[in-house]
Image 1 (cartoon, rainbow, N blue to C red):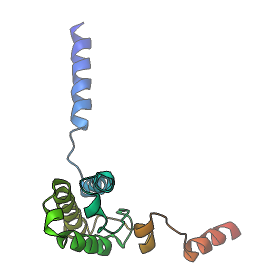
Image 2 (image 1 turned 180 degrees about the horizontal axis):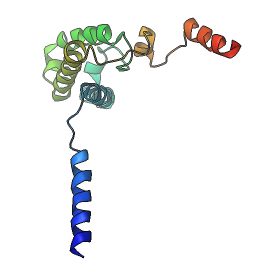
Image 3 (image 1 turned 60 degrees about the vertical axis):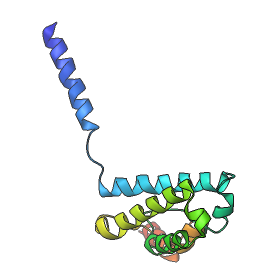
Image 4 (image 1 turned 90 degrees about the vertical axis):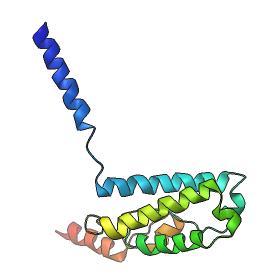
Length: 145
């Protein structure tokens, strides 16, 4: 009985410790990207911040897109240069902080760890990515073999 209890306790501790790993740079960037997108949705739908959201450009954050650094920089510029009433709104302040942290993580801390799978800048603006001719050619080359 005690041996089974000790084995169960050890298994529980192992499972518990496996979930306590610190976030990697990549996972932190993914999580912040999702948080920013959720916060942007609430800003666009909330009656208090709708007027402030009209000034914000549309952005769809994809940390696998190489254009994300330039788009985040431009987005951050718009946030920092809003009118004073919008700057003082709590959600807008949270958005500014999260976008600054995400930009800093992508450009300073994770620039070696992130793998950019596309360079479709239009996908960040519209949310839709378009296949490139290079991808089509690669598929044709694989089919010929």
